[in-house]
Length: 339
Image (cartoon, rainbow, N blue to C red):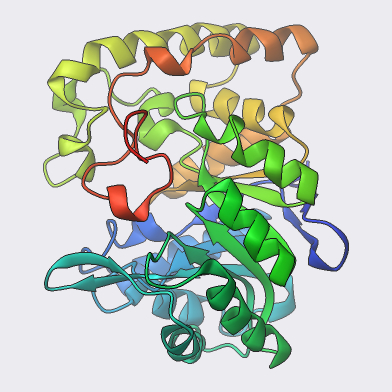
């Protein structure tokens, strides 16, 4: 069975691609991190494409020297460019003071040319602005991004970690194709206000961390299972204090997966695809084995009873720990207590 296709967005802003997308951040180890093995990264990207995945997701912040974008550019050499959808982000800068936002029109124009050069391509399919720059109105940012569309450097515009009000303001300047937002059984903030707004405006959702940053894969049975150097060692949802409670929630999904004859990760991806016709789950991994396992989730059909059981298996209030640490200024709904 070939990988199912899905269309998100509306009208001229619509994009059709594989029902799941591959997030390349894991190949460099995280934000502004790692010294990745370029040859291995290219191998994994090409394998993802060979499975039928047509959407690759990256950002200019992935890798200390933007190695992620560079690897994608090299991986696509000799392949039909029109068959691949590149989703690339910008807006967060790494400085000596840490993460800083810069969505000024000047930075926007500088970024697009640099990103195209690293990707070795003439255009980015969906160019995504991430975050909120208090110094620059979202309208000014999107007007500058529209310049890139008009110049043929960008096909579509997306937003990530932006609030509903800013999404509306941006969409009034230029149609927004998608919002890239965390969404899983462990993180469902999006359902409160972003999803209704996106549905109303005809905007799709690229749902990152659909496996709850690995929780829903069932890989971690104890805190000791997290390898040294893994960012999850210090993640609020993987601390020793949070582990027992969150592991109990995963066991509920594992029980449902066992009944269905699949893994908990595959069931989590299937749940998202059944949750909304306007979502594409975005997963990341360094493992070819995990790529092959995850795409199975896109082929699983759920009955209404099965979907309801999964949907009610975890209440967001039961999940212990914030979804991010130390990025309140760059993240929508950083926690239930801070915005």
